[in-house]
Image 1: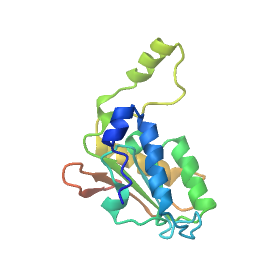
Image 2 (image 1 turned 45 degrees about the vertical axis):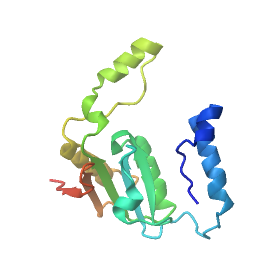
Image 3 (image 1 turned 60 degrees about the vertical axis):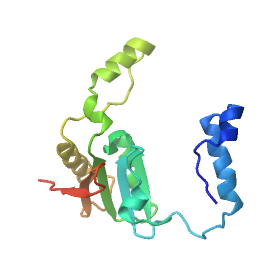
Image 4 (image 1 turned 120 degrees about the horizontal axis):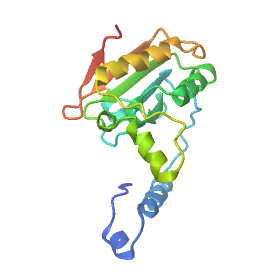
Length: 179
């Protein structure tokens, strides 16, 4: 049984929204759902921080199963204050010990600048409190993210922090030297 949210001919005819299709897909999923009996602690004791890009199927790319890891995603996969917040909870309350950072080739943040914030301010009359965190060099941004994790005073475990760039055309990871 497929749980895909891709539109059916009926959904297109009835004018269903994308959210309607996702809710319908969830109903199909839930019909066969069985409680896996897990708690929130990841089996592999790892947290993966990655970009939100729809081309990254992290579980498939990393050979992960449900319950293996915590996954934290945002634009660019950059380590922001909110990522540190999530990692802190992941480590201190839920037992993770390792952090894997996954950026990727052809990221949308490579084509933005902090001018994006100024444009938003001009449009809505208020400057966002957050930084865009745009970058030109994905390898350097991975290094910066690794450094932010390693130097956070809130994280208990910073010895196993590794960073990678996922190639969206080949599916391969390339490890980034932190130096």
